[in-house]
Length: 174
Image (tube, rainbow, N blue to C red):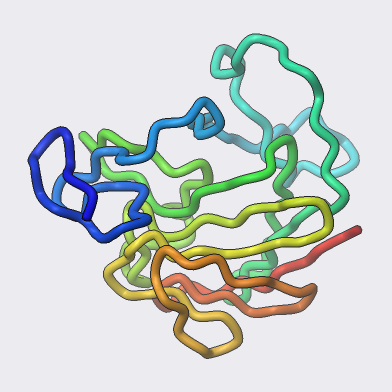
């Protein structure tokens, strides 16, 4: 069991955040939160999410990922292109929330669809893409099958991932 340094609640082994207060339980330099927005000046694709000015960290060695990732939101038809990182957290933002997801799904009716504030993460490691439920209230499904929280599950091009009732299709370009 992992003891939360903030509220002293015991959490399951492998938990990244406290189930009671949301405090981060695993501290690494790799997990950094960035605010994302649409970049309307990108004439080729205005849906690419870019880090807002002032949120970038000091320049580091550039990492090369063999796969690029896009999410096709099934209900509204919008495509979100994710770039510049190898891990993204998904959820919704509420006022006063201490921990923010990398990708805020609030504009897509995330609250009414049952998306937790910090619901799931997707990682890109070389050409392999995985999804992990972060202990969400309404669960995460891959192609209709509920996944176990805090366990990485492989994703393939075309898979349908559901965060609560919010569905998106994984588009992987190797």
